[in-house]
Image (cartoon, rainbow, N blue to C red; front, side):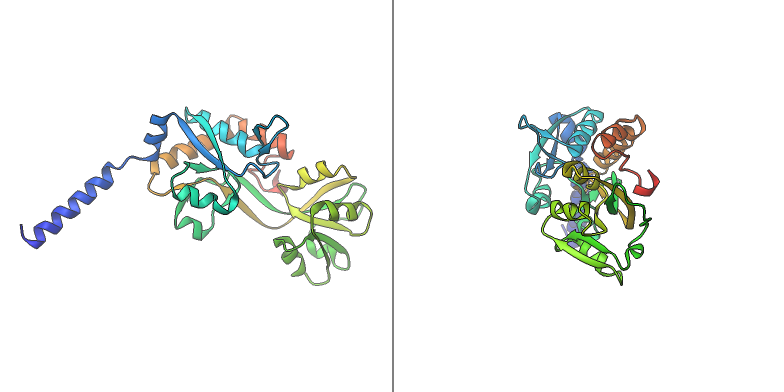
Amino acid sequence: MNKRTFLTTLLAVALAATAGAADLLDTVKQRGTLKIALEGTYPPFNFKNTKGELDGFDVEIGRALAQKLGLKPEFITSEWSGILAGLQAGKYDVIVNQVSATDKRREIFDFTQPYTLSSAQLIVRKDEKRQFKSLADLKGKKLGVGQGSNYADLAKAVEGVEVKTYPSAAEYLQDLALGRVDAALNDSLLVPYLVKQAKLPLKGGAGVGSVEGSAIPYLKGNPRFGAALDKALADIKADGTFRKISIKYFERDVSRPLNAS
C-alpha cells in the first residue's frame, strides 16, 4: 500500500468512526436516566429542604425536562468550582445550575437556548415614593451592594451614586429598611427570594443594566441530544409547566426579561 492509499484509508476509517459514534441521546435513552449536576446549596435554585431532599427551581426544571425526554432524573451534586470539569469528564450529562453560556465555555460545551434571563434589579422600601428607574436616578443617593460583587462595580461606574458595600445581603437589606441607604442592588432572579427571607418592608424595584441568560451545557458532538433537549425545554414552556415552576419561586416568568414580565 503506497503512502497516498494509506492516508486515504486512514481518513476513511476516521470518518466512519465519527459517523458511527453514539450521540448522547442514544446513551441516555439506553440508560433510562438523565444525569443532572447542580450544587444543591444555591437557594432558591437548588437546595436541601427540611426533609433533606433536593428542592428548588432548577431541580423542578430538571425533573420536567427529564420527563419530556422519557427519562428519570438522576441528580448529582457538585461544588461550583469543579462542576464544569465534571461535565467535561463525562460524570453527568447536563448541568442545570444557572450557567452562563460564555464564549470561553462554548469552546468546550454546547448549550441549550437560555432558560432564564436576568439583570441587575433595584430593591427599595415598600413605601418608597421616589421613582428610581435607573442607577442614574440614584445620583446623590446611597446604594447598598454586596462587597466585591459585580453589582458593586456596576454601581461605582455611575457618577454621583454613593455606593456602600456590605459583607452580606442581610446587612444591606436591614440598612435599607432603616433608611440608612436609599436602595439596594442584586440579581433580579434572587431579589424575590432575598426580600421574602428578610421579612422586612421591602420590594423589588426596576431592572437596570444589560440582560443576561443562563442555559444548560452538555458535551459537544451530540447534536441529536441537543435538539431533543431544546425541544423538551420548548415543550415545558408551551404547556405552562415552566411558567408554573417559575412563578412558584420568583413570582414571575423568568424566561422573559424583568421589565417585560
